[in-house]
Image (cartoon, rainbow, N blue to C red; front, side):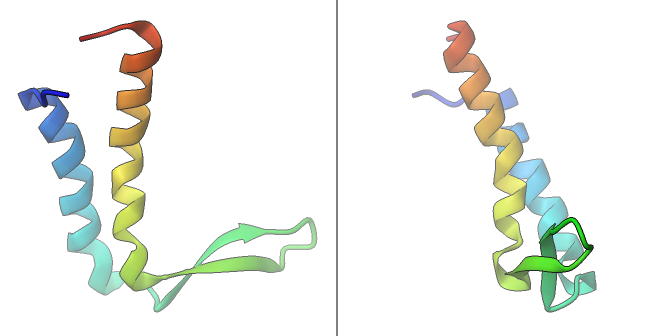
Length: 69
């Protein structure tokens, strides 16, 4: 898989944003709530950069599904 400039930007920009806001985040980030408003699980702050990879993964899956090279 050859990464184009657009691919690299879609990967790098969200990760840079997540790294920049990481010091502002609480130590445990609530990720899912039940119907009563109680938090089901938390994400540790040091793993929050993973959220920045999601846009790239969705973009790559879209390219595969629609046959973009």
